[in-house]
Image (tube, rainbow, N blue to C red; front, side, top):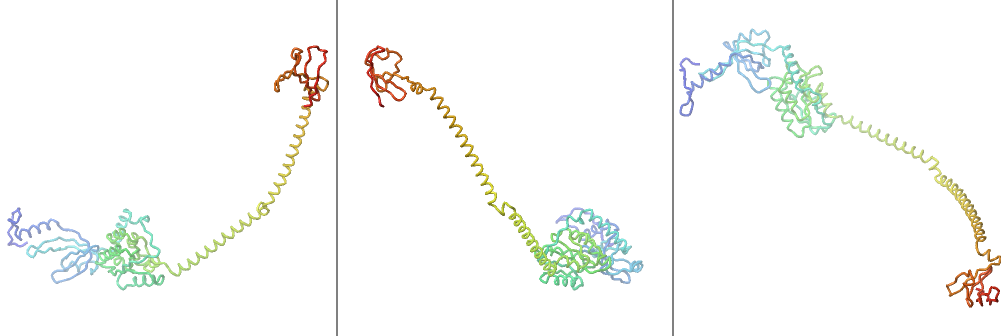
Length: 426
């Protein structure tokens, strides 16, 4: 703030009553001054030391944002650990607004290098936080496609990781296609560019799996792959992500969030792309096993049919019928004998009854000399004569004897009178 600037106490602001530049500059200086001194963490990307001051650029590792910082040169020289571009530091200072030039400056009075132990402790706290949110849960891990149409590869330009992934993948399956995004894999610009490449590949419908690949390095070199923003972006991807960062002992947080953790970029290629020769061998083996299983099934079914056909009922199908035929013939003969016996018994019974009926009937009586006399009044009107009064003189009579019938007429009622008899031959 310049000494010549007169304070302006006006509070109203409109098109008719605009504030002068000095008022706006003073208000901005007052607002910034209220912030006070703050601790800020970032990564040094530029260090310029002049005789009277040192000028630094402090960059956010997870975003494309930076602050210009100034400090006395002695502050850098007195640092217990030499500070270089790329160092992660924590600074303490105060923002100021220079009203004369309209510029904001960040003057620091303390600077500390973030040590490996502190970095690891922070990573452990972040790891616990992400794990508590469920980003490491195996249930959310998605399976990799068997043979992806295209593989997205995010790696450094012309690095060993890219060569390893491409060489191993094309040796295993020559027709595999890659969509490569070369980005910085360490330093202050790594995280923003990795995030952009990840979002770009995740939007590509042809890419079915994404590989993050980087060779080995120090803890500081691998810090971008433990960044919280990057971890959350990996978890939010719709496309399965494979993390192949460093070597076997290296475990950045991206390994825990990704759908698959590969020990090395070469191992990632083996997981993502199937081995054509191994798959062909497997197909041949499966075909042989299928053929053997089919032959075994046919042989078992053939043996079962032979066993069934060897049974007596199928070996001699007419045998049971012949046995039943003889049984039926015996039953029929027995039935005939029973019927014949029953018929003869009943016939004998009928004869006996006929004899009894004949013995009790009038024919036997007539045969002993008796006769039945009927008066004939008409062709169909005949009545038995039981008294002499039933046959007055001149009555036509029919006399039935044992061997036939006679016709006669009464001459009178005298019992001992002569009767005129006529022989009835009918």
